[in-house]
Length: 128
Image 1: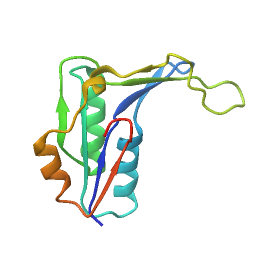
Image 2 (image 1 turned 90 degrees about the vertical axis):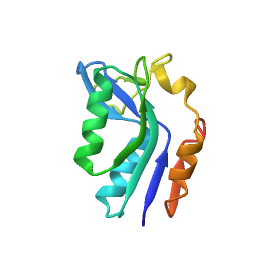
Image 3 (image 1 turned 90 degrees about the horizontal axis):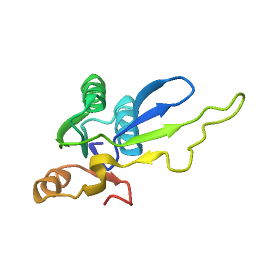
Image 4 (image 1 turned 45 degrees about the vertical axis):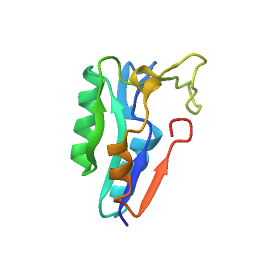
């Protein structure tokens, strides 16, 4: 099934590890849909013009997710700080989400036209 995801691309900053990984609910859904056998998978979002953007776009290319509607804007790609306490699950510290260029994300007419070309659309409700 052809699937398009609309919403978040983030850089997940694992504080104790000093490591940044590509994430975001919409990017993760798109990647996993592709890995599970979805035919065509697209993502509608935006990234900044920082090193995190290059990481995100490279991941999408490696995973076979269309990024033609991922806009690059001046500023920072969204970031989520994550703490990993010993023996525990991930903790999202208060104030650890930095929306960056996603703060002004809005769908353009061209995005809506693109989305209509898919059988299934998913979206992150705070952004769409």
